[in-house]
Amino acid sequence: MEGMTGPGFQQDAREASVSCAAIEPAAAAPACDAREVAGVAWRVWNVVQFAFTLAWTAGWITLALLLRPGSGARARLPLRMAARCWAPGLLWGAGARLRIEGQERIDFSRPCLFVANHQSVIDICALFRAIPVPLRFLLKEEMRRVPFVGWYACATGMLFIVRDSARAGALFRRQAAALLAGGQSLCLFPEGTRSRDGAMAPFKAGSLQSAIDAGVDVVPVALQGAGRVLPVDGFFRVRPGTIRVGFGAPLPTREDGRPVARQALAERAQAHVQAILDGWE
Image (cartoon, rainbow, N blue to C red; front, side, top):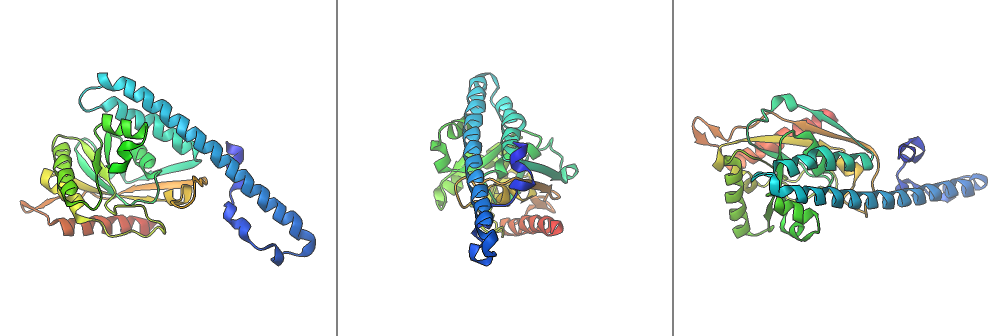
């Protein structure tokens, strides 16, 4: 795998789109051939990585589901397997290096609502690895029907939501508040979808209401680089790179004994995430 992530393979196949007409005639054919070979090599390698991802995921989820009955009501063992086995394996398979900053700001012994910007599906692997406690995610309802992933999510108590449904939103807020009040942590992406250009969309204020209802802190989390490792567009076009995960200072949901307005809380959380991202520029 290291041979495929060395300097000779770091260029994206899209760079092969440089016109051969701009190259001296004597060098045009060899240069174009080299780019075509590099593009084919990347496509073949991505197919291998995709097959590895499917096999790795199916294998670990099968084991987690077999162990689930004996892991207690909170499913601690299957959740920690995701953090210590499944996620690191997929990050390794993608050639992704993880840099984690700001963990010292967080008291992980207390339940928190982690809110992060969203660039790629590999964000979930990075967050599983970076947050050292059993962690649940809010997933879109369609994920419930995905083999293995949906089975695992249901078995470990992940939360689901039908997007753009007021009734589903209210149900999610009740479920999330109960989960947080019960001492468990939850992670969600308040933008509602992945960013295609790296710019954050406004955080949806309603998604933070559960933290206010449960009286737990909101922890802003910034992610950078995931969109370059596994872009939204294209079929599994993985490229090696570094994913940075940065934790901001926890945001209280009560001030002077009164709940913080959820719109103000959402704006503060987004500002903290943006500040971390700006600091990395």
